Image (cartoon, rainbow, N blue to C red):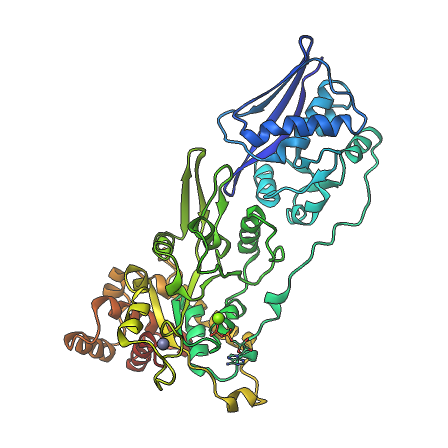
Length: 505
Ligand SMILES: Nc1ncnc2c1ncn2[C@@H]1O[C@H](COP(=O)(O)OP(=O)(O)O)[C@@H](O)[C@H]1O
Ligand SMILES: [Mg+2]
Ligand SMILES: [Zn+2]
């Protein structure tokens, strides 16, 4: 008998490897063996594949069936190999021909009745297949939209394995409605025009978006912190096609269908709850390593509301990805690296009861409690946060005003223009944004005007600012200079940066 051959893809993080599946059917005691590092869920695939074949009128070969997945050393997991295994068995027992499946990658889990269930990670799988020269793919119909993002490949999608037999034997391809996946467009309808007043916080958001400066918003409940943070993606530059493909690929392997619409050009925003587990924030999992919120926020915004309430260690876990722009998760099955380059926005109440303000009305917390509460945010993480802004609730007059705030589109065009100036300056540097200028380069190459440096050195002498604080001010001053069209930060840029770091305007 012939050996049946099909191909599928194993994913480790975002990296896929094409897996060759070979099936041999030999005379002998009926048995089924699966070779090549299969994990437990792959073993279960035997029962699913057998049920799917017998329930769709195929004979299960009453012989010695050997299925081998290679290369053996690549960890493989999950149900995404079912369909490819089933087709290899059908080729081996002569039910279908080898030729039409020779250069096709097959993705999909089988239900017991033979229908094809959607799988995670279709986009990164196809990217990998394409890179190794495969030009055609069979995918579950539920994944068709996602698969079609790989425009360079021919995508065939099916609802049921019977449709695949039919296509292979008669050439008849099922035309059906492509599944209408719900597209969540809410993120795309938000606009800064909705935010009344809040000049200070709006400006801080613009500066953050321009220079990539991480941001801390402090204000009582209802002040509009969430409102402002959730509109940040609307003023970030739109994603390029490549960035959007990367973001979609990460969301495609995440647990549960992400609400984000595929290939959206708007930067993602992810807002994990402060009680979220470490694994859900940084990534993890047992059998399959899942990206966490920091990777879903890649190229976008990670918003942590009520940040002082975060469990110990969670905020600290953000430090390493903030440095490197990625996260490596090590497990016994191997280690996986996901991108995790995001703009961090933390929000906090001013005190445990939330009512503390400069006016001091209604707050029942002791001054020690107030200090302790925000003190939870101090430490090495705060070294990475350039901007701190106090958000006071807007007054009734501003809320009632019919004058809308400046729309996101206008803010965004300033952000884009200012980033262009910065990227020209950083042409020969390994970084792109002002927030990423290393301390050394700040001292040597990227110094503000002399008067501005004198001002900062005076503050340093008076111990009103630390060396670290000085670096933050200078990075911010570069962003203000870019927004203001200055080639070098002026004294005024530095003064305003100083305020921004301090919470003022
Ligand atoms: N500046 C503002 N302009 C318009 N509406 C606002 C403003 N600030 C607050 N609101 C209203 O108050 C609600 C609560 O704001 P939210 O952003 O959730 O506050 P916070 O996150 O600071 O608790 C918003 O959904 C909005 O309806
Ligand atoms: Mg809120
Ligand atoms: Zn209080």
